[in-house]
Length: 606
Ligand code: SF4
Image 1: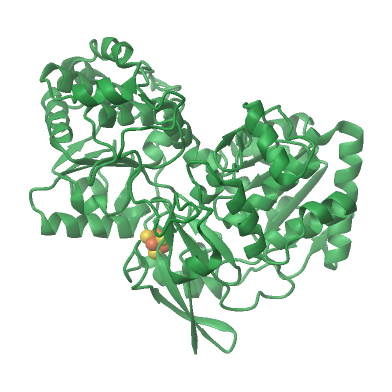
Image 2 (image 1 turned 135 degrees about the horizontal axis):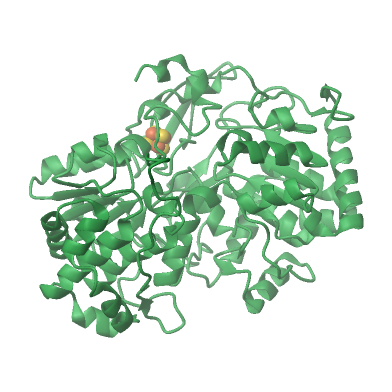
């Protein structure tokens, strides 16, 4: 029996796990007591990882079908990748690089994310690469950038104990981030004076623990936060010194929120005005740690919701101090790592912006390519619309199941039917999306792959292979590099020379030099000692737990910006014919589309 340390592959809590192997098989899993995210604890999903690892339905060999009428047949890797390279080259020659697209996943390692982005934006010359993180985290990214200037979560898990008030919004933490919630429960037990406010339309297990549950009507969050700020302003609970020294646009926001009295917000939100006042007082007393997730992100005005909550932190100076931060909880295990390498259609490596010519030139220089294309790529939903319209001809889908998980399934499935070429890179052969695959590329999964992932508190952990992959499955990053060298033998060999995941990490590390997420002081050797938080620049001896402690933000002026959007009603209001609000939620013991957890009988008992 041997033991390999790694991280859980489910939620963004990023728990450390110890994988026990026996005779080349994963025999058991336990929490890693040395990992700061979980100190040895695991939730039911994490504790059954070894059972999911044994699950049936794995993709063992590359498969290819000659035409849509034929079933896929087993082929070797050379045949599969040469076929895809030939088809991609033909489509690019005839229609240009934007005729192809990639749809990838927040469950990939940072290294796989990095090479996928370099392949699309650097080698092929298209920004048509988006990820399922678009659906969960893009509002959080834009909310941070609109207010703090960079996509950098300012707080850490240690703030849970340091907070006087915990403000959970749009998150059923008890189900979605169970180990974070265990820590909240323990903190409250140790400090009975600590307040817990939960904002959620549903009476969840998280809400049941709250001292104050604001069961707002769906989509009314911005009105609530504006009314809380209105109360803080009226009762002089704001931090005028901090506002004057470290922010801008306060006057515009102040004028905006004057109309959002608690009474008015009570009518919009469907909660008592006195509860809004109580929440505002507890928030202002602080120190307050806000934890928020899909209730704020998955919305037609998700950026406004994120920013309106961050406004409360800025107005009360509650940022960069122990117990005081707006900390967005990431849904997937490596949505953060994907953001770090610019894994969206409008981003570039190391938190650079595609619309900045200087940033494009920097990335082109770092990659050794002539240019990075200027035009933003298709975002997740646009990408499938473009496939349906025939504008995008070929799509490469990796480690995600859009034929089950994207909204408007009839449309998504019609788009996949209409595509000239669907390549699916997957660990499982039996997902809804593999049914559409012209080419199936078997990938390694948890316990079989090497790399890094970053959790919600900016902590990078090593992901390690404990057992050999089944059949001919290969690591995601290696499949991409092999394909790149076939697509363009000269440039591919030059741009994708990596022989292991560490070489990819080292190149990614260099792209962060001088950026807010600078990790030039990190290496696999250091990460093998312990997981580390970024930034971790060259010469640093430890990562930084909290950002913006000096009141200097990542904007041009160095000041944070108040975002003064008005509350917008939901995009599809209820009416007499459609009287129900539908909302998304999570099953406690299942993960996403259940490709993995759905195969473990024990996880259906809750
Ligand atoms: Fe895995 Fe999240 Fe559970 Fe931790 S809390 S064991 S990361 S699913």
